[in-house]
Length: 274
Image (cartoon, rainbow, N blue to C red; front, side, top):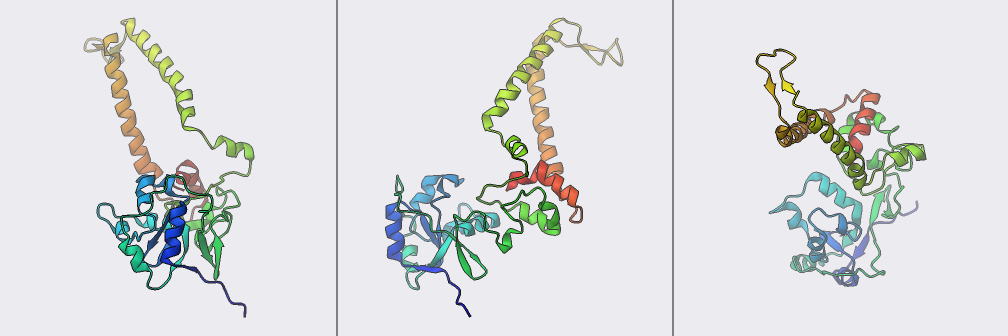
């Protein structure tokens, strides 16, 4: 029988040497991770990870001050490299908090990340590898796959991944599904300004009264000077409405047996979590 390759072993000296070159390698007990491609995505900032390069981060994962979630720990496994040689893990543990704050990672500090798949260790840069825990084929559009996840969908959709995802077969539809942050302001700022102007000019005519549809005797006039307060009230009410929709509609758990509702949930909001 053909022998399967196991995880690579790294000495503490090799880890320190690679960190000195600019890589960001950290260990958790004896498991070694290459976070070079993740440092800029780290919610706590790049320098926080850089300072911990070449050290054991198991205590930092458990906190205090911040205990990392199960999703964060699953995300960490995407960057698994191999194992620290027996006995060397104490050297990294003693180096906790010192790290290597390299400013410009050298080209030689290439990522070493690997996935364990069917007894083999697959390089992290192989973004299209289909692994058992993925449940989907990343080479194909996800929108037509997620409905088949059934009861596994809710847990799967809340596990973020560090890889590009595709929703549609059509390149045109896929293009329309991606929007730069500034496009939102470009589209909606003119709309907000126009509707604000229409509202203000309507109030300036002096004919606007509250409850006039029900009674004329007790109706309340609305002057143009009220416009800033009305605008602020609208922002508050919309923010509250958006929160309620997000919390109680977008985060509803679709029935595991309904392919179409799962697909709809993923299209409207679920893909945001991946």
